[in-house]
Length: 274
Image (cartoon, rainbow, N blue to C red; front, side):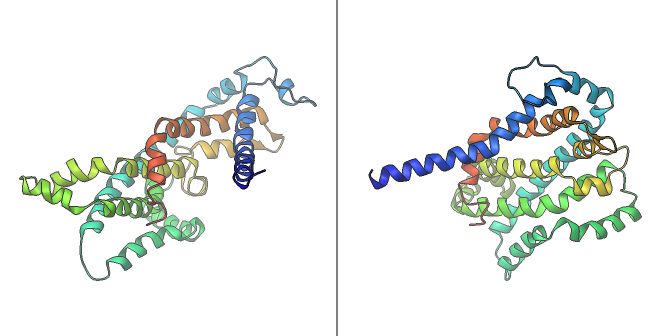
């Protein structure tokens, strides 16, 4: 067997293993969420069963919609603010010329390197004095502390790859600096904006550490609802797989909808800060 053929076989085998590792658990979780308790806890699992919405119905009857709304508000608003400010700050940082510019850029991303546990206590004290505990606004601000440096760093890399001559040509034609940014630079960095938005949204949507610390009865999100299914009487596997599907499905659908931009953005080297 030729060397090239062996390489292809090994590559496809590795790809198959990755697919099995990532896809099979998701498919199994989704299928389990539609099984009746008897089918779900059967000694011999089967792919053939009569589907039921029993677990989803029980979740929404117990007030799951409130958790969904809180997740949508906290994750959505924090993502919009992070991407908006990230674009403005990233553009300014890429076009500005001053001493220590690289140090400023590194300081911004270094704030993202700290583990969540390192910032939870200071934020908790600040939020308590500011009256932001048990509020969606507090969660949005908490998510911004991690998403905004990340957005600035990525967008700075995308804008830095754009030739400044494009905007200079627009300004020669009479456009202002903001119009050159809005009409020239911003559309050309659409893959970076989509990539940044998706990554910020995934972090906020899946967050548990900030939510369990800062959220209260009126602002709890979906990961908190999932954790509450682990009771003293044991795990409610049916509802747990159903809420897991509700948490994962939107992110997968959004990723598939913008996969063209996402792949292009991730392959431009922005994530690695090149």
